[in-house]
Amino acid sequence: MAGRRARTGRGWDASPARAGDDDNAPRPRRARRGQSGDTDPEAPPAPPRDEAELAREICLRQLAVRPRTRAELAGALAKRGVSDEVSAEVLDRYDEVGIIDDAAFARAWVASRHSGRGLARRALANELRQRGVDGEVASEALGELDEETEAETARALVERKLRTARGEPDAVFRRLVAMLARKGYPPGVAIRAVKDALAAQSAEAAEFADQIDADALADAEGELERDSRPLG
Image (tube, rainbow, N blue to C red; front, side, top):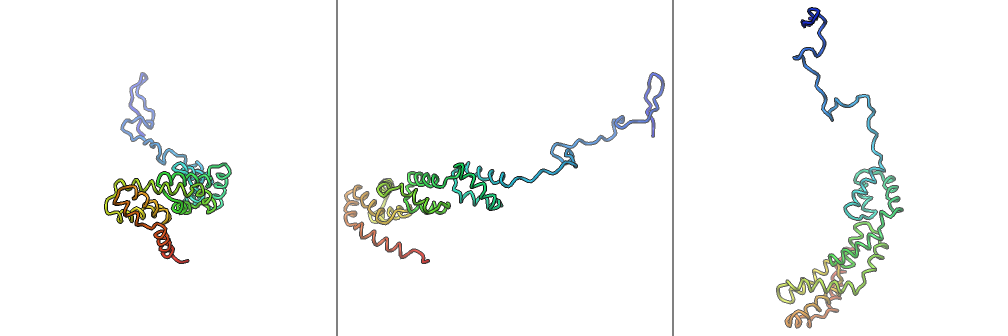
């Protein structure tokens, strides 16, 4: 190996060349952070995530968006592959501390959807069923919405729609009854609400409303509705 030819005070230095003395010699590249070069190959692998911890994280993310029923959270956990045993354990604990409360959820849902969307008890019952609320719990929450309040809401919905309604009274009548039916109002409630609102709108509408037999129409609509339900 060639020696260095460096001038010193005692003569030529012929000691062997050391790595790094040559400016042109390639230098080792430093591994960037995050590359495999900066990890210890002998370090133990990271332990797998605890399933219960993952389940709690999923639940909290779901609840951060809006309140959820136990059934909704169970469905979210199942989609992420959380076992039934761990799911039940986490959800039971959330029940105990009040994070999950289907009865409170149902009451809040009924109040919010009735005041905000004008939905009647039948439509609300269907929504609660879709969200996994127990039938008895749903019935208790729906019981807080009485018939008088439901009828007042139906009338308010009709009066608001009448402000912009166009067409002959009979066509307007059919559209408004259909609108209330979609919101879950029984035929009798819907027909009476529209009849009363039309009677107060104009002389022409009032004359048409006088010809409406609300009870007979409600009975006919009820029979038609029963006949159209699927068997079984």
